[in-house]
Amino acid sequence: MTHKTPWLGTNWKMHKTRGEANAFATALKASPFANTGLANLFIIPPLPWVEGVASIMKGTKVKVGVQNMHWADHGAYTGEVSPLMVKELGASLIEIGHSERREHFNETDDGVARKTAAAVKHGFLALVCIGDTRAEYDAGAAGDALARQTRFALRDAGKAAIGNVVLAYEPVWSIGEKGIPADPEFANRQHRRIKEVSADVLGEALPVVYGGSVNPQNCLELISKSDIDGLFIGRSAWQPEGFIGIIDAVTKMLGEQS
Ligand code: PGA
Image (tube, rainbow, N blue to C red; front, side, top):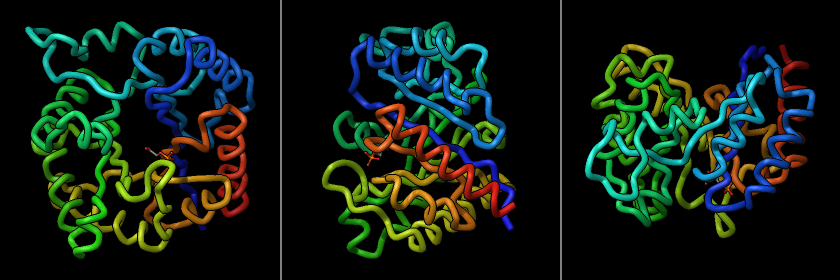
């Protein structure tokens, strides 16, 4: 028996033209899921398309997010974007700490701590990504890496994180073209540990979604697991049919189980 309302979302990374972004949003708005209560949906376009996509999704329940932001309200931070600016774009979700940002742009645990607190302070939902690298996984240190990243993510936000932060477990070795999807049972165990750490910090466990090579074949097994509260999807959801197909399959299956 499960009554979970899953988080289902997609990060488009640095993909899509303005026309493609708007066409995706228009298709999702026209789908039966734009105002569904069966899932918490979110889409995270590249920054320049956020305002247009948010205005198309207005009046729906779908959250629109940004892929990164700075923690300060304003300042001498050339090239950065503040929470106040993001708010004016119409976004309600901030993705923080994706492994590609940690790997290519020197995103640190300290930065993730500050950004998460800033996102929560400004009333956004913070989607904080954590994940073990291949080397950490191979050394049997995945659990330690995840515990560290979780504690840092919550360092500055504290109890304000409750209800305002969703953690995304994305093993680095599972992401992208060369990624190997995590075994659902392994992922579930990691989710449980992450929840234990968040409960240790906050007194309450945060929801944890899984990301990394989620596809139409593995989405149902993943979402069936007790501690997997949602799916964070890249490539398989970049076309509206792909995203809508996974939403349809997951909500149908959970509906039949409840
Ligand atoms: P993928 O991306 O589904 O294409 O592996 C996942 C992610 O980076 O969040």
